[in-house]
Amino acid sequence: MPAITPITAQIAADKAAILAEAMPYIRRFRGKTIVVKYGGNAMTEPALKEGFARDVVLLKLVGLNPVVVHGGGPQINELLSKVGKQGEFIQGMRVTDSETMDIVEMVLGGLVNKEIVSLINQHGGRAVGLTGKDGHFIRAKKMFLRGDNDEEQIDIGQVGEIDSIDPELVALLDTRDFIPVIAPIGVGSQGEAFNINADLVAGKLAEVLQAEKLILMTNTPGVLDKSGQLLTGLTPTIVDQLVAEGTISGGMIPKISSALEAAVSGVNSVHIIDGRVQHALLLEVLTDHGVGTMITRDH
Image (cartoon, rainbow, N blue to C red; front, side, top):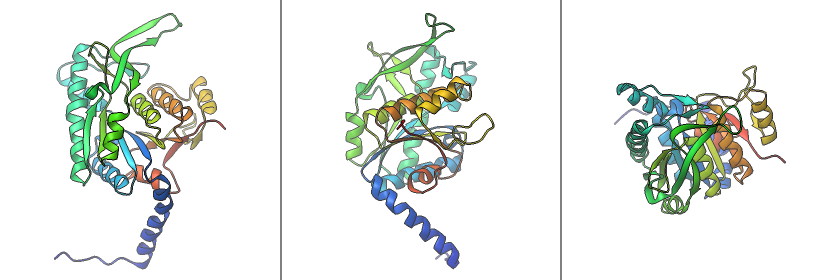
């Protein structure tokens, strides 16, 4: 029988304080849906992957309804390089020709999705993997980016924008105590697959599910100002100013766009958090001190 390591009174008091701090949040959010966009280092570092899976299971066990939408950019890039292709991005969006789309489906709908589902299940959860093609619950249409003028359109291949999301399938899984794990692949009117930015899928899904929170995990502490300081509280008006002055740019733009749309469409709060912090998800949801930037609608 393994030896039991005694703990000091101070350590015991600290642990008790943490548990007590979580109680009002568990009570407040019990039965509520929380959509989590899972990406960045949290998806690639083994300790962070294990920690994320445990955190999701714990949230489910205490009565919340987590829904996971995952990315997979590094894994896609790795497989592209193996077949001699270079990933290309325009305005933060991946250019996706037909060959790249096959790889995106293989990685997101297969390798990555199955790994996340397996990890959650290993830690006692009941995860189910989905793509938007399942039941055609994410319907999409071809996306064109704006060029230098409003009339110019940039074709980036099989990249989609969301036409609609049917919440019935995800809601049904929630009610049966399953944890949905969703790959951001949509389906067009002709049955064709579209690669959709995972932040946009998470944001729209949070809207249609009337989620309490949308949490976007990143490789940064949150939204930073020009001097590199964390901005902890934002509103759509402030975000518009930050975009106009160039403080928010590049890959952060689709993340902020989805966050804003969710915030103004009824999601109570949107959080952009640092997925490199162990147990960042629990810290954001169940403690007094968050670990990133919170966006709420203007008052």
